[in-house]
Image (tube, rainbow, N blue to C red; front, top):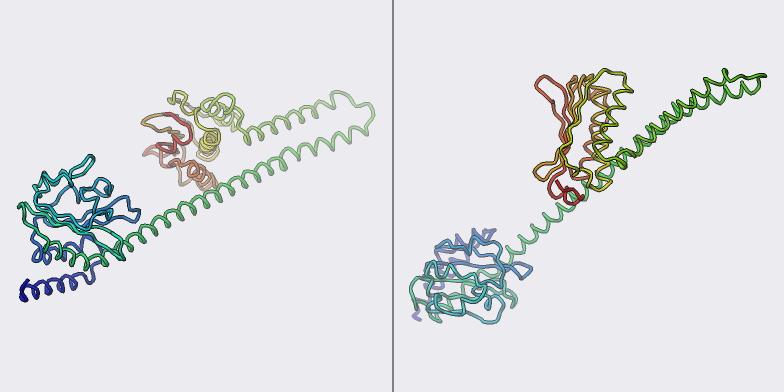
Length: 412
């Protein structure tokens, strides 16, 4: 090699080093140095492949021709036409015609771009950091027999310049991916923690409600009946007629107690299924409210909703129960419609009314909507509440779909 030629190569290497400064990703590095490399090693296709940290996959970054190598992210190292180089079994690959060279064509090799683009002359050298192969630098030409050992040596010099920079970029991207995965995991963990907290709060509120019902209604009634019995016990000649009101009071207490227990544990749901439990709740709630109200239940699930795991089924029932209660107690509605549907891999429960609308009803409905949202979130269901029509009313919809439905045993 003449002195002037050596000087020219040195200038190109120096220029490549300068061009690397400030480049923070693989694509920008390839774009910045591709033209300078072409002055050292002529090519029709130039690419750098980087082995990922797991050492099982690699990613290719191209210049010149765009091939399927650059579009296939990530690709198994075992399928690479230059896998022997990436595995460190050879220190370079050089061929006059890769289209017919058996080293590039083996069972499972992703080598069709070689044939499609007629990449005949090819040279490949490893990118090494501290003796470890982290990737490869490759140059290809349509012309056969273009490259020799001097080109291999020049490629090695370029690879020595690029390898530390690529190693740093790979480490930075791996750190970024790890940070993203960790952040997502923390977000999921925090979401579960908050969901569990919301559920705990909802269960505590439910416990307090049951306690207050027992205290304010049942215990108060039993205390009053007990005092009347004490007074009657002191009286002579107590007749059956005097005891009749006490019997009626005790029967009413037992009825109220059964209702509280029923609300705490939906036995109708467990014994007769989801649709029957909803229908039973609708009839009883409307009757007890004293309101004149129409209702309709449509079940188009073909039994799919009863295939869910019990905790999920109960959560869906509680959501529907709360939506029905809001419609009857707060919405001043004249009609409540409940639709159960299994379609397109999803279970859908919709409760709609023709009442005064969400914004007005919410003022008196307390934390019911938040409880419904929490229950839906904890079973990975989608929850939506919106006006049921342009004229007003409210529609509550909960949808259990996709992986969540499969995970909980549903078959829509």
